[in-house]
Image 1 (cartoon, rainbow, N blue to C red):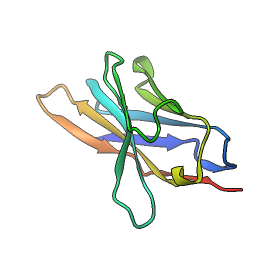
Image 2 (image 1 turned 30 degrees about the horizontal axis):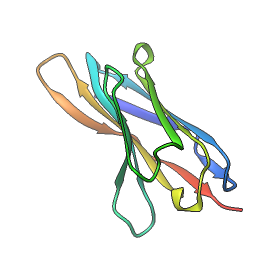
Image 3 (image 1 turned 180 degrees about the vertical axis):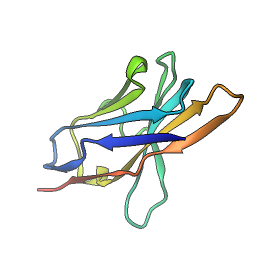
Length: 120
């Protein structure tokens, strides 16, 4: 089994910054893509950013130029630096990881979510 533990959410004023972290632990042989998704009240979960094991990144248009995703493969950890935050960034942010357990299976795992609230 694999656990993803997120941290770093909270309340921030518009224009402020937050850094989210997500650490994976458990039966991990390797991790392929890792990513962040978010879900606002009454809306579907949407992709924020993803990063491959080689460092290739992909961003939602709404966060390009403001958010930066990175990862530390040695620590099985992915980060999301969020700058110039807007009220519309308010959501629960979820970490995702594609984990190879070394036995021929690749499974998607999700964190429990961390609340980000942007408000004055």
